[in-house]
Every structure is written in structure tokens, then in C-alpha cells.
Length: 184
Image 1: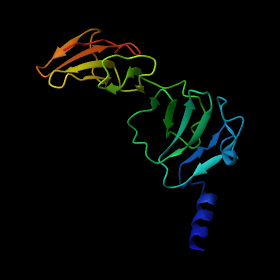
Image 2: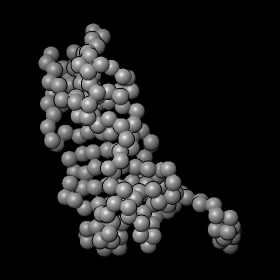
Image 3: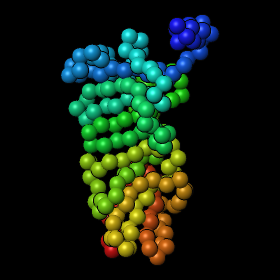
Image 4: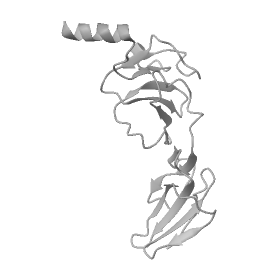
């Protein structure tokens, strides 16, 4: 009865207790959340909503096969707004209720290859997009010989390299520009 009273008071006052996210997918393998409209930009079917105090934000995941899954997640730490793998692109939001309406086309920031022990990159290399990236980096660790690629909040000139004696880090400022091949 007490829980019902809290829900009733929250409903009357207009307070949202938990994050609410669209929850759907446009492939029929999971019929209970299937919605053929889920893959459209501007999605807004209020029949497909998930909510709960265990969720921290919403996401949209677009698979390489083309199908789309929208839902709530508990593990997003706010460190990146977009994440890309060879299998899917995923974007996160927590700005407001039911914020996962788009198809990740508005991911802010610089797109940088993000990988460790990757001497070369190609179309299957993971990358990330972050609003705080001002440069992409390619780093050669002299001790291990490992190539590490990622992004940096530092603003550096294109092709500017810093050698600290243990690592050589080269910077660039265009999307996916950190494809430099460094040799030991």
C-alpha cells in the first residue's frame, strides 16, 4: 500500500522516479519487443518504454546488419557518447526522458580509432567518438613495442609527435586520422 501511495503521489506531482527509455528492436527474433518502426529516426512509440531505478541512461544500437535495438542500460558511466565496433554502433543519452529517438547521427566529437596492440587499422578496427577528443593519437610503447590508438583532450598540431623516452605519441585532428604506422 505504501508503494502504491508513493507512485500515486509521484504521478500527481509530475515527478519521474526513474529514467524512461524507448525499448524496441526491428528484427523479429525477440517478438515481445518487436516494432517494425524501431529503426526509424525520430522513433516515438510510447507502447515500447522501459523504466526502472537500476537504469542510468538510454541507448540506441545499430547493428552492421542494419537492424536497430533501443533500450535502457545500467552500466553507462558517461565516459563516451558513442561507441563503434565492427558489429554495431551505439550511442547513449541521459539528457531527458525518452531521449533515445535518433540513429546516432548526431554523435559529437572527434572520431578516433581506439585499440591496443594494433599496428595497422582497417575497416574492422574499433573506433570511438567523444566530445572531449580534440586530437586522435597513435602511440608506440618502446618497452613492449605495442601500438596504442585513441583520442586525447589535448589540442596538438597535425603530425606533431611527443617522445618522452618510453613512448612516442603522434597527434592528428581529423576523423580516423590516427592510422599512422609506427615502427620500433
